[in-house]
Image (cartoon, rainbow, N blue to C red; front, side):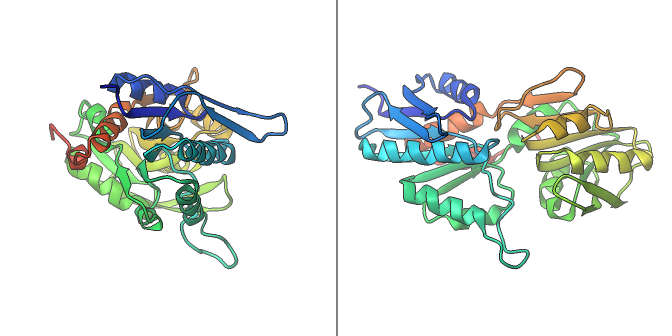
Length: 315
């Protein structure tokens, strides 16, 4: 019988979508996704999806608004083409930092995006390492919140752990850093920081052992690399031998690449949830989450449990 599974993608991360399809042994669906001269997005699904189980892969990295509109329109197109179920696979969920009112007269944009996804016609969402876990509660549809940690741990198992200390670059990331420290059997510390503007961060003090240590900073995302580089500078000032960082989402812009080129960070380990590029002289290691997302898609399509995806083997 012909497969009832169909996978499509927008323009945000086609290489990841291709890797997921290769893992599943399914072809990438045929869809036209482009823009009119005035910037309006246009979508046309080029094959029959009536009654199909449709998965649309689209991160909301830069340009975030363009990628979001593509996702909304692709969902709407699939709904109007009579797809049976539409799952939005959002490896990186943008606007997640705007998850609360932390000052007067500001929106809760991550909730707005959740509402728009549901209104567009999404039946389910798959995402990786939300900036704030409570965002799952913004949806009135099922959300499968996966973690990049299994992919990270598979790489980090080769790290020399005898001299390793884990650090969170802020108090808010302590829970994630503690999970890494627990699996790597390493001590944990944290850094207090002060943000002066959207692109500038000052690391002002730290708690934890650093003298002669190899440090691994754990965070969910980096954009301008301001937090990571400020933390690395403070750690090395306090005697750290080597400073690396494990970050789920490398949403790097030119400022971020510029900071990383200064050499304060010895290695940035991240994943391909966004369409990140490697540049000469910048030590970036990119790990693939295609198997993780592919397995989730396969299990959801077959109505199987995804609980096993949260189990870390070999530790």
